[in-house]
Image (cartoon, rainbow, N blue to C red; front, side, top):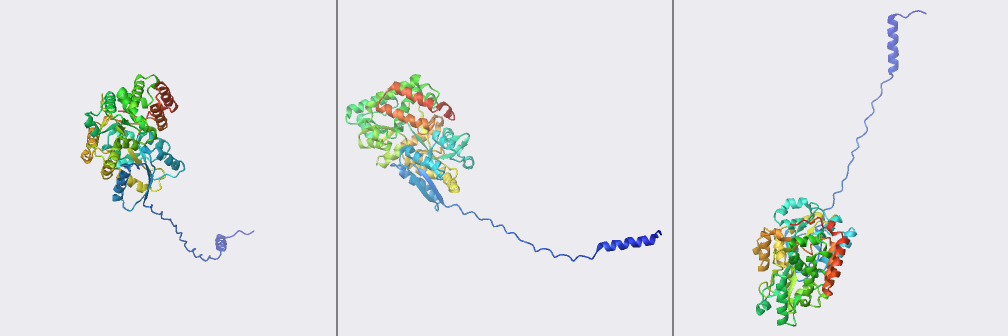
Length: 452
């Protein structure tokens, strides 16, 4: 076989390369561009509506609710307010209706609740949003008393905005009667008994002390004032924190015995009366005094009585130390509220002097804000009380409405004290209260409350 020359070899390689390349391909036109349009639905604006639950329906309270809503309408005139008022002092019936809505996952935007253990029950149930950001925006803790801030702070977070402070232990009296009989308003239990005897002697047909126990809590109000004087403020707090063995506690037993001694001077047909009807006994002349909260001022005014003229009042007791048992009315933001943005605007108005002044003046409470001048109150009773609170915020202790103890205990406790007034049994009541403190695990459940 002949060897190929170098020139021949190079030509052969070139031919093979050219044959391998083949004809050139015609470029393919690029596919037309496809534009993808993503359509995002614009959320519908929140309806201008506020759904609210409250229990302000009695004389003085209904007018206060109207003042409250007017203050909000002045700020937000285009908002429709949907009220769900449920009658009953302190919200006893209100809570039943509200709880059914909450359990069904159908909350209103906001509802009236008391500070303390009642508020805690809603927080523990997961029904309220914390309001740390709103409180910081409003700097609200700086303008209300420390005990009030503590009463609405659960696990370190404020959950509601208080609009007032109600004082529980106030003794109202018929001023004209006291002036006529030359009586001084009592400041201690012994003075109360002496005044009651004097009234009974001068007016045999009149009950010295009015009472209505239809909703039971009214009975606990009377007992609390006696217990506060007998045991003192620290003992009072320890009782409702479950830290006292009431069955063997001499102070608690003495308070029950003193309550029993007061019963002959109490209006006998109290079981069928509500709180406002018990105040009505004083207006009608069937009773001379009634132990009730600050909201009674609004009630008396609704009946045409003027503070300092037809009636007057003192906190009771005032010795050996003047302690004010209090609770606040408050509003918060429901988890899953239908109108959360509107509700936040509502809460801002609740915290404002523009709402608190007309509402609290009308309803009877004190201002939550202690930077509001007490002179805004037209009556001497609240001017003095508001000034005292501004100067002595450490004298405030949660009362039977706000409740240091869990609300489940408190409701059962009201039944026991009301039953005692109807049919007193000191030893049986001591046993019943001791059992309730154990049954409802009060010592653990009330550990959240700190005083002073």
